Image (cartoon, rainbow, N blue to C red):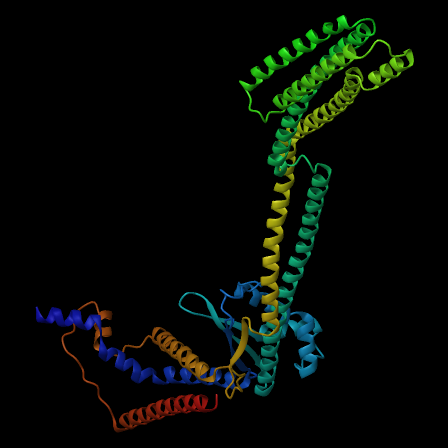
Length: 536
């Protein structure tokens, strides 16, 4: 059982066999390893070196808080960086750098300008630096050249371009935004002026029909209606007085005619006056039951009663005087007395009062007509008030919208102007050089230490492959196991190896050569790696 386990273990890993292969094929392994490493390592020193200079540019946030001054430029830094990079990598900019710094002098004779620009674009690299929230906080600018000083100068030039271009782009965007808002603000101001003009013209055209004058129109209309009612009442009273005066005048004329023949006819006029006084007193009693003594109609009736009583007293006195006068007076004296009586008679007074009453009626009628016209005018104004209110509402709505638009644009324009001043003072977001362009000491390409490692790995793979191929192509038997596998019957005995002194010496020489070769290969690789690390 133990033999079976030992045999299985030996089949899984035969150390003696591999050691035998290493003793026999060590040169097959070391020579390809050394040659491949030497070729790759030597190629790293033959290839033209490329030095890479880099700088770190920090993205500084605005010094003024956004709560006080809101920036008016594109806030997406990645898009702005991409735009700035495209502008810097444009053909015109790169050709200017190539000409000013005399880049690619060896390639100018065989490459066109477009090829030189493409080559320079490949040599430029921009890497973004982000924080934990995926925000861009900085970015690196690299440039590769065969001369380290040239790489540093070009990197410095590119850095200045990035900083200046960022300031210029932000200022242009800020000024463009401000100018755009100024244009929109002027358009809104003109629209607002048009709305104000329409409102002024509408108010001037309908100055007395506006909704704001509704209360005043109602008060004026109420006053006019009260005045009209008073005038109509006064007109009715004047007309009644006119009828009374006409009746009284007729009675006086009848009385005067009758007094010219005999004194007995005098009483015929007194009953009419008495009846009129009785009627006036009855009407006054009726008015006193409804109105006070200060009412105009009451006062007029009292005045008429006083006048009638005075006329009645004068008429009685005149009749008594005529009755007591002597009959012997001459006809001339009677004629004079008659003329005086006619001039101062009550009929003449009533006639003058009647004329004054007619004038009063005419004036009252004109005043009533005027008041009716004014009342109709103010009623028409009140009837037009809903229409004017709707029209002024429409105009005001348009004005309010224009005013709100104007105010909003004015606020944005002022904020944009403040942001523009902030950008001009370079107080906004800006780029600042955190690490100046470096002067490379070792070339970025080829990385000779990396090439050395690649040569070792490839040499190891190739050496193992050569050893494996050699073993497969060799048909000799070197150990007991291989012989057992070849024979169909089991072995009975073994013949030990018989070595002569010459064989032993040959074996020693081979061993010394192998160790010397291994030491040479290992020493060369270590020395080359150390030299690449120090000088590469």
